[in-house]
Figure 1: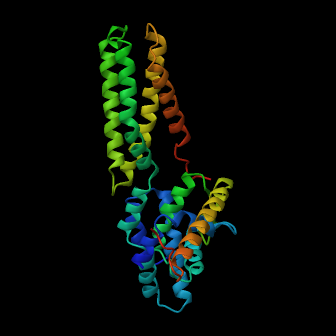
Figure 2: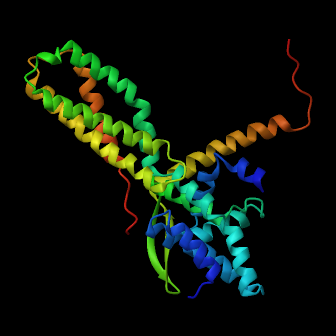
Figure 3: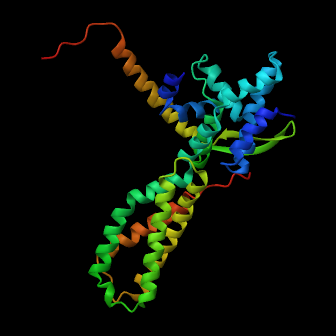
Length: 114
Length: 191
């Protein structure tokens, strides 16, 4: 779990943005989407999701709004246009990076160097 | 909907370190998790323990907010660029022989004290690791620095007998810093 959290560093922002791509979610729902979407591998402590969401909101990548559910206040986040563009760009970068790593890790003879 | 005393105590612990709006938002997490576990058949106490464990300790959450606080980031950015700004303005003022300008000594001293206070405030915010309140000094320091930048530009325009070439770098740099500060002011979580 700790190793997974460590591996997430640097990728958390784009993953959080991706969880909001299909529509607005509140913090707990974001955490659940992250867990479910990763097949249970990225099951972060709920409390650590919120500071990251605040940072993304300050950066203008997501926007939050308050509502009232079951008598308590709930803050729901949606992707902004800027956030959507960032997600698109980061997704493309990741796919290129992942394709390169996958190609290198595939079992095959390495090219000879002189 | 009602919560559990253990969860309430956990949230009260967070409320001592974080803003009320943030704690309101955070409350949703453990309460949702608690209901989830209740629905799965756990007793109220076991569900509350599980919810708190999944939520994370108050110290960890509060520290995470501190590390990612806007004021702390702003303070670090301003301190990182501070030495360059100091060199640019220092060169400008020495080249323009600022000591010959018609400025009363108390005003110069007051400006220096204000600048030093801003630097201390920014350092306090930038090095904060556990206190969220201290990170607010970063935002206040940034605003104060924007005022000092404006004052300096106004003084140059009003009092400098002639402009020297380093001011061609210093003034746009200060204007850029003012613009950046205004642009990055924290947005209130009120909507």
